[in-house]
Length: 57
Image (cartoon, helix red, strand yellow):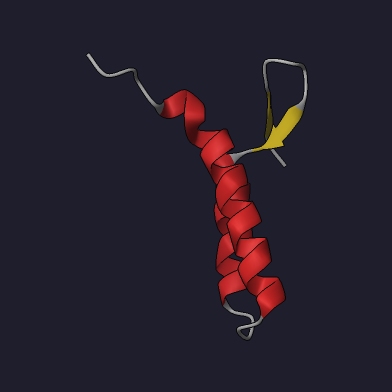
């Protein structure tokens, strides 16, 4: 599993791994737990992709 280092030395999952987890999750039946996990994965994905964002001019 590819990882990258965050500012405080913590490791975060790479964006491709998070995308895969989201796809697998969406194949599961709807439930409150699935919704909570989806929200968590979206936050993780946002953190993983934050370095891809360039500041506005």
